[in-house]
Length: 278
Ligand code: FE
Ligand code: FE
Ligand code: ZN
Image (cartoon, rainbow, N blue to C red; front, top):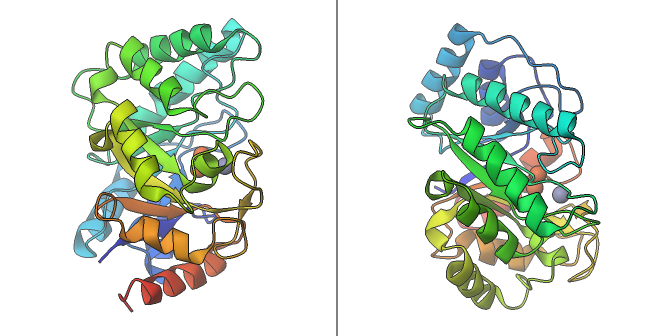
């Protein structure tokens, strides 16, 4: 069965999130491990995290994805904001050590006029500070829409970060279908070609998770507005082709469409039906 889930809007404990995932027919999920807009970390509750580990094992969950807060910008011009990014990521990764074998995804950041090269260097430097040897979580760089000075709208930019970081060999990538379409990669009509390009530049072995979103905007728009599955420019058929693709189907697929847990449950049910799993 495909590992299909969503970014959960419910919060209040990790075991509770596992149960919320089960309730919507998911066998993976994504969540924030702290307030997405604030820097405040949640207190670590090892017993609660242990109960989530049990729930995941008992229910055949695939790997889950913790998403870094949106305010994190490891390539800000401001040294204090860069330091805060490192501090937040280190804290989140310490919590994730209670859930070994899962993923931590982050937006590479916006270089705000410093240039892609400087931005990539700052991101790589932060990663080398926080991705310690023996870490049990794989840190993922997310493919971005390329909005403003966002780094990661081109596969080459992610490659640059992987090359610059000493820990680059231990990092992975999360592909967001809305973002890559907005970035000009036509996953709707030319999925095989896009995956060939991804493989050549980054390597398909580095791809660890997929964000499943339709897009409100046309190919190459660089806007980053997610749409419900089937209500955007990518469309349901193309989304199903992505999930069922032989090079991708083993990965965890996470919905980040603009709806709540209940709405995600309906999308999961529809996708499972179309995948022949329901
Ligand atoms: Fe994201
Ligand atoms: Fe995403
Ligand atoms: Zn997005």
